[in-house]
Amino acid sequence: MQLSDDVYFAPRQAFFGSIHGVLNHMLVADTIWTLRLTGASPVLALNAQMYAERTALRQARATMDDDIIALLAAMSDADMAGDVTYKTTDGDPFTMARSVILQHFFNHQTHHRGQAHDLLSQTGVAPLVLDLLYFVRE
Image (cartoon, rainbow, N blue to C red; front, side):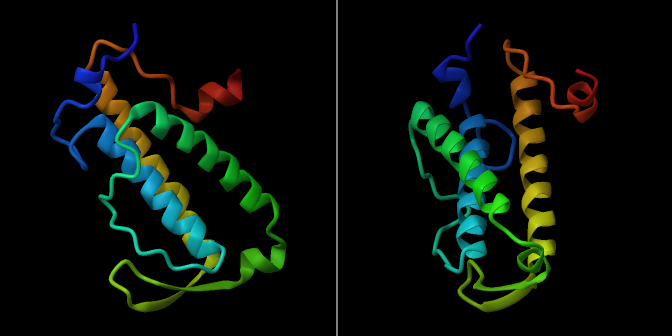
């Protein structure tokens, strides 16, 4: 059973207000951090709606995942050990260790993917398994 648009876009008691909102926020945050990791400081609100339509959001997510893989594959050990200077979403300059940024980056994804999983659990559509052990044992 596929999730209907009515259920997918329905207001929910969650960060960013709906399943679509949570998934959209993840793309916003990933966009911000991948640009920061490449030397840019984007001005983008954390609740910006990059894609109002779910198919476009799904396609952008797939592209972003490919971009993340390519970005990390291109990083040397020296890159991983370095710092990143960027502007915060408030416009303030900040410098942080790239390793800390990457820890936050993937922890943030895990946090919101868990939220999306929970929101899907509240619908008639069973979410996919997320447990790492499931994939290790497969």
